[in-house]
Length: 235
Image (cartoon, rainbow, N blue to C red; front, side, top):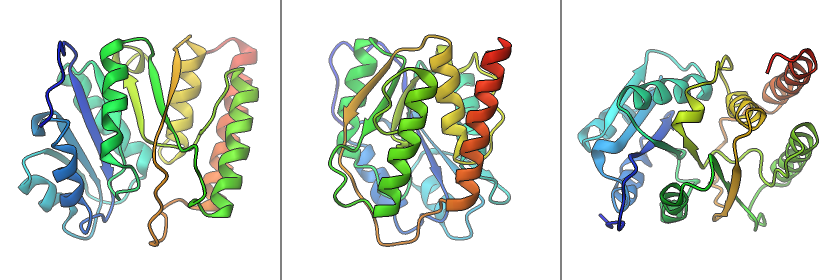
């Protein structure tokens, strides 16, 4: 494992995972270069393959849902686990190898500098991203920028660094991919500082777990709810 000088921050890696048995061991082998096994938590969201068993065999903590409950629930459970263990920072990385572990040093450096509360990966070169995903990402990022007054470059990227002292103050309710939008909106509303790091764009050929119509509806409802609460002064 690479050693970072003057590290005085407790940095955890959270991996929400659903049926990624073909990837999880490769991913863990790569992230072990940067994060110790005792600072990694895999939340298995009701997988029907060997995801949980393979993760446990590699020495990381595993929480398993009895059924598929959604990425938001998986992240929330991981957050609570890390809060209980006193982590200062959480890096979220997908379990399907669509995030390059070699980009982890950029997030770790941001944690060590402590200059921001949220750091999100910016997939600047999106040539490999399917056209419908590029359009969806552009529209959601534009909407978030308009609503928050903060430039959002890549609103759908789940490769993120989060300061737990800010995150644990939030009341979060979403269960699916809108969960990431929910906590981003609420953290920015409380004045959290946002930073971006450029990361590699990777897309596998296998089908994404994102449900286009239902997740778009949830995103719209989340935005409307946030705007209403802001108008009522409830944020």
